[in-house]
Image: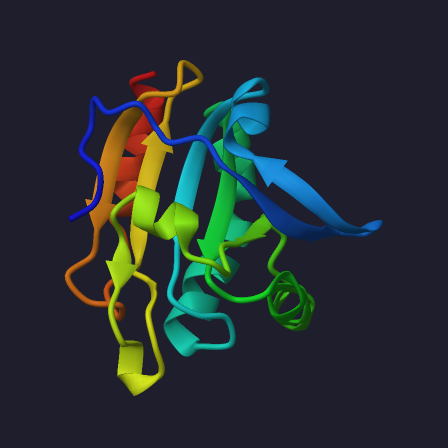
Length: 158
């Protein structure tokens, strides 16, 4: 079960691809700029994950207007994430949790997805600039999307 609201969000530093190559992305560094929406997703190049992150990328302006940065996290390599993002036009930063450390810290490990191994569950967290989880959701199945209206409501309340 995902970490509950009111919990201090575990900090992390993961790898991401930028136009300049491989780089670090951290929660603490992102919180200096804005609130953060973390979107855990099971796997790049899958239909539901593609739809979710393309929709979020298309609506990034509304998150910026709510003083929020969106970061996607999966257990894919940063190279696979980058190829997928380029293919699909995904513009949010994607962080590679290849070793599943952050997925486990947020308690959103999905065991043995489709018989291929453990992945991140589909989950969403809104984290205030103070580092507190103010919204937490793990969907019932990997095919279900987070409730983006509730995510936006949580951001508006900050």
